[in-house]
Amino acid sequence: MPTSTTPLPTHRLGATGPEVSALGLGLMGMSDVYGPADEAEGIATVHAALEAGVTLLDTGDFYGMGHNELLLREALKSRTRDNAVISVKFGALRDPDGGWSGHDNSPAAVKNFVAYSLRRLGTDHIDIYRPARLDPKVPIEDTVGAIADLVRAGHVRHIGLSEVGAETLRRAQAVHPIVDLQIEYSLISRGIEEEILPTARELGVGITAYGVLSRGLISGHWHPNRQLTGQDFRTRSPRFQGDNLHRNLSLVEALRAVAEAKNATVAQTAIAWVAAQGTDIVPLIGARTRTRLTEALGATTLVLTPTDLAAIEIAIPPGAASGARYATPLMDDLDSERQ
Image (cartoon, rainbow, N blue to C red; front, top):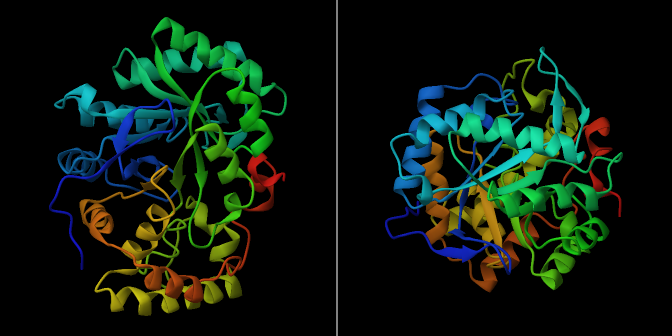
């Protein structure tokens, strides 16, 4: 199994963004969505990532209703702030029971949300600030314009977007440079390849790819009889249900054969495939433990040859996944799916 013993390579995020590690760490699962998590292990995982050279740390103000930002603050307390590039999503509205109640990307809300995030994170600036979803009630120009005000005031360094389509990306870029688009991209979620990725490249916008292991589904560690708690997002995810799950896991087994031929794990192969699609793409790894982080870091030393890439395409052809990547109500929130 490949391991990472050399410094992580770095890439510039888009044409105007910061230099970041070639692999980023997504913190959401340390607080929310995937059931109970060990906070101490989460902090230790952030520390291990920083020590390994991971600089891009992605969070959201609504992950655990602020808990995730507080966890990151604790993790960075004994570290040098400028060694981390903090990416924050905002705009999703929650209720006291953890439910979801829409989005608010209005200019007043933008400035309210950032004030709370800065306090919870214990920092005077956020490196990349982005709306989590497009708010249909607010023109993207107004939202980006409000963040641009924060850039000029020094509270935010760069502007990013999340799950928007090509047209929205163009409109946003016309207001202020966008450094990256955070969007799902994996072997079984390739929808960005047709229009969104070419548009991002034309505009000089980087891609931070989340869901590269499809929430564990194509990690090689998922078992069809695994029991999930009611709070786990995957209990409602179409790809984890019934026949869809069994068909998707058969794809994983085909990928396992390719991985084993490379003396790599399934997860490492899936991550390396995303990274191999371009140096303008930075995979975000949702590791909640040091063990999973160590495995993911091994992907950075895994070299996939043209023959390997062709074998992976045969194992998991485009469009092979069974089931949508979100349940219908959540799919309706995705501007990126309105093509």
